[in-house]
Structures are given as structure tokens and as C-alpha cells.
Length: 453
Image (cartoon, rainbow, N blue to C red):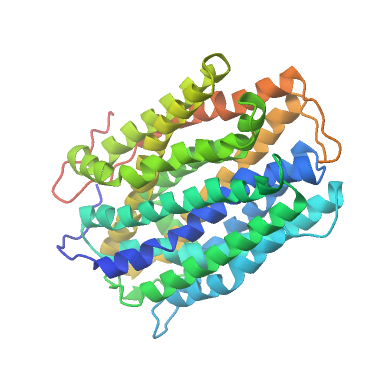
């Protein structure tokens, strides 16, 4: 067990709100491309499904380089704004523009369109890292208290729920406002609206965290990459948490990529994407106090297991949608949403614990490096969700198209959509339950989990 330092310090409500609003960036940049980009390329730009999956995945590989680099730079930043906030401002100035350009390209189709979207998505990933890596490092430095970090992060999760609603409901609504399947112009309008929301939220977080406490290690780790990675390699809670988060987010990204196809081909209504997302994000807005209590009652590991079981159970039950219909689909996604709310909250709370424990043990500020690696690996692995789903579609014989030339999909493609939305993500989530049993970080004074678990 790694024992964090004990403190009764709390974070003011103003800082909690200021920090939480930045989650509009996290949720939006994850949800909108994950939900719409693959569909946009295959059904509007005539990009083959496998190539569209590569485009969505490839820029994320860049995260493996840029995220740890930005994290290390932010650890070593000395500024009157603190080590993290200058990077929040840099991301706010670049991300909205890059995001807009992803959906606002020249009239290209096929491979040229894939190349354009790939370059813009790479720029988006870089700008996102400027903001997200320092942003995620901050909670572990705001308070020493094990349970206070969960309370702090429930505000983040409330904003994530609101942002996911905006991304998963508003963005598809704008797209379909000019026709059931949308148009190129409606995608550009959506990109404009989301870019403005991103800008306002990111600036709000920059100004809202001006009074955030800094309780982490005062000195940055000045060691080289080799020394830092060697130390991190021996941090078992960090390694297990990273693998756990990667597994869970791989399942989430698959379901995001599959959602518009599930709505269009399984439910027969592309606009059902909006109501499905409402069912998913509603629990995030309503169940945060419950998950905070469960984390205190069963510790974070036990609460995480419960959350993953709910997520996987709801996903498995969705397999019966072709037989039981659209209402059943929404009920199962509601169950998924309850589990997803817990998974998200506990992931970030555990990461903050790992950061605080590392600082307490080493006396060095490495939150940026740890967060950079965690974010890069998680983002890179989760990006494979769209690629895996694209491959499943290709195996099922899915036919790419343009709005002017709609096609009838074969039954095998419709079956592939259902499997990619339900069965495969469910197996991945249940695997994460087994991985959670290996997580060892516990609150101060508590016995470490049984190693035989």
C-alpha cells in the first residue's frame, strides 16, 4: 500500500466550479469525434470504413509522444500563474480552431478527404493535450485528503455529464436539423457551435482556477526521461490504474463510434442517437452523490467493480434490442449510464490519489509526467475503439456512401453494427472488473486489499 499524506484541507466551491467547467473540453473533444467523425467520413466523404477507422486512430498515437512531453514541461514551468494554468490558456487559444477545421474542410472525398481530416485531427489532438494534461494533473495537487479528492471530482463529473449531453444531444441535433441524415453544411454549423462552447469553457476554467491551492511537491523532478520512467515503472498503483482505464475507455470509444450506426440500422432512426445519449448522460448528472457515498462505504476499488458490472450488464442486455425494441434499448443504456458515471468519477479520483501518493513518497512534482503518460496511453488505446468497430463493419460487408447515393446495407452489416455496439464492449468491460482486483492503493489507515483477491 502507498499511503498518502493526511490532511483535512478542502477546496473552495468557487475553485471546484472553476475547475469543473473545464470538463466541457474533456467530454466534448472525446464525445463529438467519437460519436460523429467515423460516420461523417464513411457516409459523407465516401471514405472506406477501415480507412476512416485508421484516421480516427492514427493521430492518437501522437499522444504517446506529445502528452508526456507537455506533462514534463508543465511540471517544470515557473510562472506567476502557477505550473499548470499557462498551458490551459494555450489550449484554449488553439483547440477550438483545430476542432472546427476537422468538420469544415474543402469538398474532398475518398483518400484525399481522409488525409485532410487526419491532419486536422492531429492538430486537434495536440491542442487538446496542451489543455488536458495539465488540467488532469491539478486535482492531485489541490488537496492531500483521500476522500476530499472524490468530492472535488464529483463537480468535474457533473460538468462532464452536462458536456456529454451537449455533445451527444445538441451536436447530433444540429447535424440532423437540415435533414434526417444531415448535410455537409449542418456538420460545419455543428463544428462552429461546439468550437465556441469549447472556447468559453476553457477560458472559464483558466480564470476559475486562479485561486486553486497548490499542495503538491514544491520541486519538479529534474531527472531525465530514463530516470523518471524507471521510477514510474515501479509505481504499481499507477500501472494498474492506467491499464484499467485503457480497457474501460476502449469499450466506451467503441460504443461511441457505434452509436449513430446503432440508431440508424438497429433502431431504424438516426435521430435516436440524441435520446440514447440523454439516457447515457442523465445518470452522470444525478448519481454523483451516490457514487461518492459508495466510494466511502466500499472504498474506491469496490465501487469501481460495482460500476463496471452495471456498465457491462447494461451493454450485454442491449443485445436483445432487435427483439425487444427501442424502449428496451433506452432502458439498457440508462443502466450503462449509471455504471459509466461511477467508472468516470472513480478513474479520475484514483488518478489524483496516485499523483498525491507519488509526491508524498518522492518529494518531487511529477503530476504532469504521470498524467501525461496516463492520458496518452489511455487516449491511444481508446482510439482503437473506432478502428476495431470500423474493422467489424468491414468484415460485415458495410458499404460506404455519399448523401446523394444512399445504399441498402446487407443483413451482415446490420448484425456487425449490433455486435460492435454490445457484445464486444461488454466483454472488454468485464475484463476490467478482473483488472480492478489488482489495484492496491487504499486510504490512510486502511488495510491493503488481500493480495489473493
